[in-house]
Image (cartoon, rainbow, N blue to C red; front, side):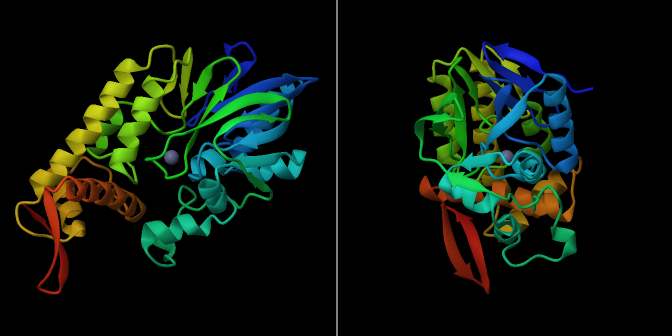
Length: 297
Ligand SMILES: [Zn+2]
């Protein structure tokens, strides 16, 4: 049974595999932050809201990953709530095939598709600039937290609660996968600094839960990301394709879950690490023997 759990003031969450934010706005209305993976999750959200005599008037999506926006469509069908996101993420949310295309590099076959990659298409979307907004009576501030996804927003509510999406992940993720899913290492580290300096009273992570002290998790994420880059650097014993780096990672840690979709998302992490190492002047890109190889300097 899903519950509406108080965070602070008028800010609540509905716990689940991805935390859903709820901002009460008066007159039995509310604004949602993210909507979960799919219609089944959206139905659960609406049931919980109904049990609390609440109707969602709007949805704010932190970013375009399916487990954050996949419930939009069902909620919009039932309530006509508008969905809001950054221009970058919103463009993907209303065109979910983009996600499959950028992970697979071309229109993917069935084994490279899943509901975790391609969400149900959102019906209505409005792009929002960073900064302060009033959405259907909810006063919020949108804070760019790029890195995990390029246009990710943190949502700061009027109760000074910061919903940071996937800008931080639970510490066990680094132990299990060795690499984070990030598209930009430098931006991810900068976003961690923004969360630390935000002055928020309470922090809500989609997968990391609710916390009033975020310092330890920020440190775990910073350390995990930097360690991931060092692992990639260490695997680069000879010049090799980035796909070969990932293969060596899986060979070194056979406990890392592997699947076609998992492999393609892990390749994003390897790429982000290689590109960061390139920016640091520690590796170079060479075309050699018919391949685009990465070589230590
Ligand atoms: Zn995500």
